[in-house]
Image 1 (cartoon, rainbow, N blue to C red):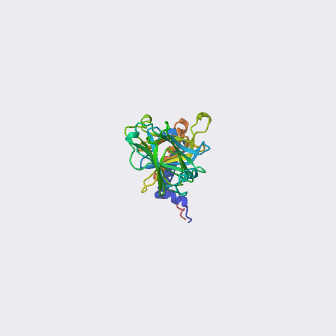
Image 2: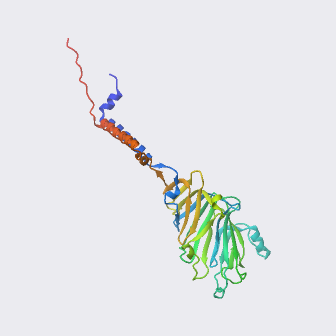
Length: 366
């Protein structure tokens, strides 16, 4: 007598139940996938990027593939206010050739290789309080090429009413820092914000209202500390407590030109070394993402990211529910409901139906 697999399957309820459950699981998985389809999304509709927030000591902003509408590759700039100054420091930077030659003209001997650089404004004296203060313009550019990534974050204490600070580093390129200090009254001798102490390696000196250019090495932190000059001053009061950084070259006719600052991707990553993860990310789906409104607060950084891209939140992709869209069509919804009902009936029949047994015919007696 030959073995018949189909008959054996029909007679074994456990085998039928297993197949039925597999069919149900496959259908459930298919409908789950339809309800959670990763798709590019308009970032503004997610409510996560307008603005996106990077909190002090908790996360960093990573801008991937930045693109600026500037021949000089200007990335960021800030026009300092009269009651505001800025301190700059880096563990791995060098003065550019023109700045170094200027100091060497006065007898200084400065390393041409990267070393530690500090550039700090001296605190104003009581006698200088009546003088008109200097103000400093800060520019940060890409050196010979655009970086692969720019990282921006905050460490340390909140700035409260005293200062606004951030750290920045680039991967794949060096950053150029330009500082232009000016005295509106041409009386910079002793005026607030005009006197600086500069250190380059083991060399240091006191200088007055100097234009300075430094080159920050790849993957080295550039620290910027914007602070108020006078104790009773509130330089960020008119901007709701934040210090805005201009992105790229500001345009007079933005409607007819590319956005000043764009990027292939933007992400916010945790600074927790014990649990490194990406908290929020967007990758462009063709056209570049637009970045604007970069603001430095007391204990957070904010920016707005616009465009269409693939979004992930805590590593999980932002999805579109195609099942809901199907259910909006009455005919398709009815067909899907009928298919589900038929599938359930089939599985129930597989599991619960008792196979029929045909009577055995006996031969006629001789």
